[in-house]
Length: 76
Image (cartoon, rainbow, N blue to C red; front, side):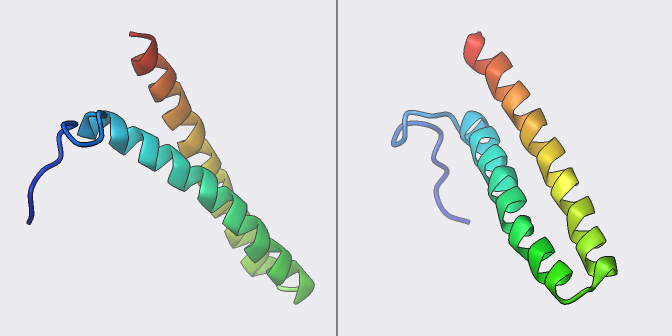
């Protein structure tokens, strides 16, 4: 499994880093899905475009929850 990095190298505890990473990935996914939606729309595939819109909304919710979690933890 490898060695665990618990903040000695990065200066950020794993649990905090994990929330930062998760939030960034959700935001990145929201942007990426915009391209996928445009591609599906261009091909007149409304089923696929709607699928990607639902996925995008889920990622947006995850990003918002991650930002809330970070704000709460960084204020402490």
